[in-house]
Length: 599
Image (cartoon, rainbow, N blue to C red; front, top):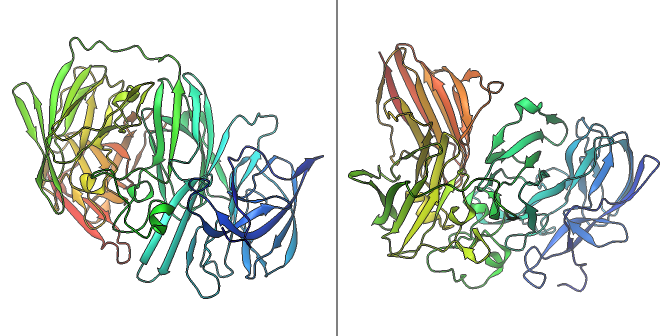
């Protein structure tokens, strides 16, 4: 650590900053440059800009501003840097951000009402806003990236503060913004990167309230393992939308776009070790191709030695440890369905993976680079023997399924006590047991934290029907987006297979995105205009009647999300389009059209 720079502290957003008295918060903030340790306390470090409460160490995230509604906030902000900054978010809510330019070594007093209850944030950028918090391009002036951001919470009067606040940050540096060369980034939660991020501890039956702030300039689909969470409110930083109870969706993945916040409620009903993480692989996995994932990888002079073929999880990951007795009655597996999912490599460089599903005399095979659909029934116990016939280790996650932690599929983490999920070694087997408690659309996919396995086709749709319901692939259609940064495949193929529909027949459309890093825009149109369909499910959860609605057939689906729609078409020609936007020189845009003739 430089002798001239203070050490930056990381904190868990539990203690508000400043002095609150007689309805007024008095807070003195400073903007400083310091040394940040986002991993181990004695690990790698980087010089960044950060906020500090006057007289205290700088912190990442910045000091927590938390007041009740009706409060007045009196701030004094001193910019100790040799460069100017622009302050954002220091204004009444709801409102409009009115940036304040703060010159080098300038001090300014700000006085404003807190406004309406909600989850908000503040941040600082360069004067022209070209360098937002957590994003910078190296310049001769000062190469230090910024982590100038913090949570701003306004509490409802008389309501206890029984929640936790988490701020997502990204350290991103781009030497050449035009070409995105030398792209380096990693993610943190309350200033720490997994496995150094906080491990939360709860008991079965607890009611957990969380506020999440995405203060970064990147999007993050936040995924919960093993159970659903309820989305209570969302915020764009200036205005919060709190949902009526009957309109609060239950999800396993929610997209937090850049500079937004959400409030959620989670009630764990099973003990075990669970994960809550971003579902973009670049934000949770080390990469040898580009130095992202952890500061250790970025600063290492030598390539990191990964565990065999898999890379460790890093970055935007949080552990949720739950103790107690399960609130769910254990299923009887003495008369369960039994099937085998055999996995093998079909080619390499890049890897292509083939899966075979065997149940009695019935066999289903991969379609292109996607595993066969697994079709189950609600409440029916199933045992799936995963046979690893590959030359590398693997693990399978049953995305969205509520099950025992041991079968969740995160190697060397899932489980409880001494029973920890092992990796499935080459030539080995692992038996997964669960009884899906709800009908819906889910996914099975590798959780070996390996881009090659996921983009190589180790995934497939997992469809759960109601008891007695039969599966007809002619009217029940899954469209699964998969692939890595350089490609897009639908149902394992590079093009769409023409379909023939019947007038008056109701069709069930299941949209799934299990891409490595990117969102996909789906649309269903006739003569270029979107047709109408009815939303019926999200992430495997059937929408309550109050949330089911007709709408235009177009939707952005991000990694880890599934959606269910119903449509009864009229005669004519339709096109189901999957479009992946381009990203500078990282990937060209791609479109896959599936023509549908209706007669």
